[in-house]
Image 1 (spheres, helix red, strand yellow):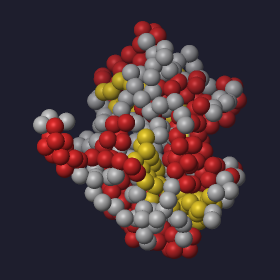
Image 2 (cartoon, rainbow, N blue to C red; image 1 turned 60 degrees about the vertical axis):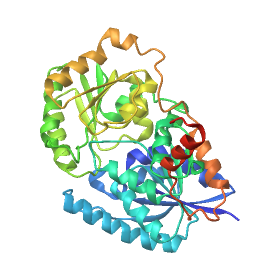
Image 3 (tube, rainbow, N blue to C red; image 1 turned 180 degrees about the vertical axis):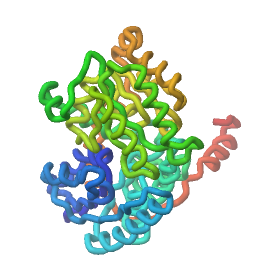
Length: 399
């Protein structure tokens, strides 16, 4: 019997990670794809990126509008509630065998809760990670507890999911999904990419993405102004901005960035580059600046440095190519100078990406298409303390 696999996507970033898995599910005779599109994908304000999904030729099983015009805490809370209602109806109609969710955003929380109440097994991707500067941290671990299969990007994340009480037999270390896209990448020619962007790379170019820290003490707009002040110290550096996603407080940052690039001739901002243009840009820029997870997950594979600002990504594994700093203009400027220095850049030859070198898509699909679903919903808390106590009793040694 063909297994129905519902895959949920709500943003450009997570769609880029999921795209190869979506293709595998669509093309396999063992599985039936049920692609559910929601969130920023359906918003003109955030680039209406559902058009990218359609251009890739994927059939969309359901479209769930859930975003409100407000990105306040109240607006995001209400959007999550609308999402839960929409997913309840969608999952009832589609009746999937498994729901695949990636990451930690509020759209994913609504989908996870709806699947949990509908008794549909959840496969969660990129669990066990930490992002201490965003409430995504709590959402991610909450989805872990609702999920039944776990696909993590590195060994420390596998241990953390098990620490949360999940059965080790259901936790699979597969590496980072983004690295599959890099392995397959045929970068756009530089001139073609420049025409597409309406912008040119310079002698020195940076890719900049800055999202609000949703649980930080400092105002996100204040932090962004510190970043822009640091960038002002390098007037000859060409800047390619990708705008924030639909996060709490994100609209104010979008307006500020758009105002900034309007006054700087060598800067441009895009709602969404799409994965191909984004990864192609990483091939040509000299560094990444901001607080996007991509600076930690994908950028190291291109042998370029990343300046990770503030606490949003605090706790994530990072390669030697990543330097971190406080959201202060002097600190940011110093670290930008660091990653662009000849000494630092020469040190990145052969730098290892802690998220692996690819193969996650195949590993995830193998489990999704073949694992027994009987009794998958039944979960017992895997108690590590009890295991350690038993080990001490039998060996007299503490693990």
